[in-house]
Image (cartoon, rainbow, N blue to C red; front, side, top):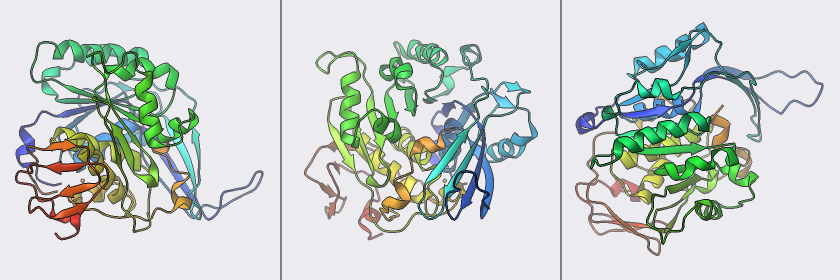
Length: 385
């Protein structure tokens, strides 16, 4: 685990959602109907968007707490022990004797195509009564996964009530990967709306920019009326990610090309954790934070699992934009770990694809530039560090 340095004085982040068990089977080709088939590899791992985001945040060096209902089942014992081993706070989680939710994933090694079977048995979701027991003064950021609107709305309202009249306010992020119509009421209650590529495609949006602009139009009031509206983010697989800030400025952040991915399972949660970490702890402007999230996600794909993320550094790890490996991947599939560098005095503005480091050396980027760096080692981004 990397040193937290000055990060240790920052208030912890809270991830609210679910935890379960994912059973992942890999085969050389996808089984046909009514046929027996042997998997070449199988393993089980922690499931649930919020639990995985909290795990990756901790590997990046953040102080983090997970809040969700935990099963007393022996199936979760090793998973919970792993989270506690890296000091993820689980102290406020209620317990139940019900078996945990589980998801079975079958992956075709040749194409990257996957079939997902989700358990239909309902598992308890954290409620407002448990949330009310928290001392909100402890937290600086709360991340939700959009599941039970009737439970999440009063939690978000509690945070906004806490923020009222304060200068040091809690930021709210929300990941939406399903049930679009049911969760629309949550969109303008958060500061950062992180949207699913697969859900966007299901809704008829064909590009990341179209998704961000389309979501912005669904918000109840236009930009001309000064009310709270979220920054909108969407990861788009091998094509990177896009974001739209509260002023209506869109940024496109592509992935670098190069190495072929080894493991894309959980990459969406790594993107989300990377963005939140960059925004909250590194105080990066939105487009730089999304680019950082891209790099965390890419770094995750270089090995199986998550633990190598603790070795993540500020340099690009490239992957091959292989459509066969990526076209069937979505961060939705994942819903069912840097030496201390100061990032301060960032100013972000749209541009014509230029980026300059502190030595005024030109770096090619796309649709944004960062200027006025203070104590920032950016040379590695250009491949010189």
